[in-house]
Amino acid sequence: QVQLVESGGGSVQPGGSLSLSCAATGTFFGIYFMAWYRQAPGRQRELVARHTNRGTSDYLDSVKGRFTISRDAAKNTVYLRMNNLKPEDTAVYYCNADVFVRSYNSRQNYWGQGTQVTVSS
Image (cartoon, rainbow, N blue to C red; front, top):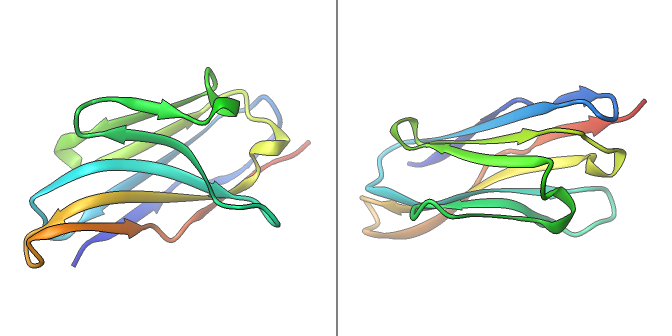
């Protein structure tokens, strides 16, 4: 079985920085992409950043220049470095990945449990 195990999250002041990590564990052949989503109260879940197995990355417009997604392929881990955080970045952040699972012999999508990021003065 495949799980996405997150770490990080917490509370910071505006202008501060925070790093999130998400590791894919279990038995699988490979990962197509790993991504971060977020959902604030009363808001729809939105894609924050995505890193593909081709090495490409894309970002939500409002986080461009402030957030950086990176991947450690050897550890099957994705990171999200968040700089110059703003109150509007407050949300639950979710890891998401498409994984080719050996037992299913197919591509499957998985979600992490979510981690709270709070930006306030």
